[in-house]
Length: 167
Image 1: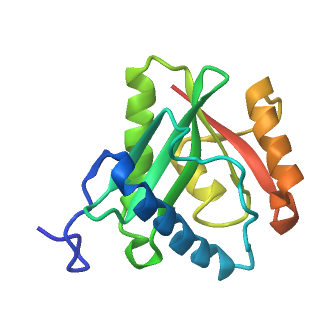
Image 2: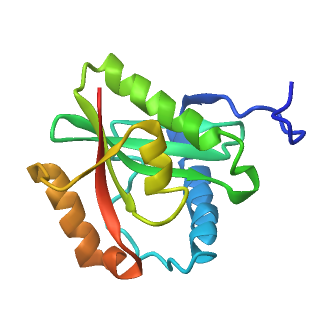
């Protein structure tokens, strides 16, 4: 079975630490897509979004996408969702997001949050189609995430929003 593009479907599964370097490469490749819409280069981050995550899911072997999830404000927080550009537009990002949401439900969490670029089609508009809503009254942990983003220069690259999906 293929995904309509001749590619085998990218099965979503828990990531293992041995592939974290591959997932960092996936994120760097994904960042190249952002550069095409005038966003980037991204500042070096001071935390390892993979080893510090509550859970990381990968898509494909070798991985062509991943989602890392933190626990912030007693909710799941999508820290990063990346798919290599060559495999974009085939539902891999949605599959990864769906798995993160299922994980949050299994943990009996009340919601899923994230922070993203407001005007990039595969960012806030994508999440809104899934049911996420923009949040302006931020709980302490999500407020700290947004403060860190502002301090690191992300907001200078384009308008950003915090979003939440109630579970």
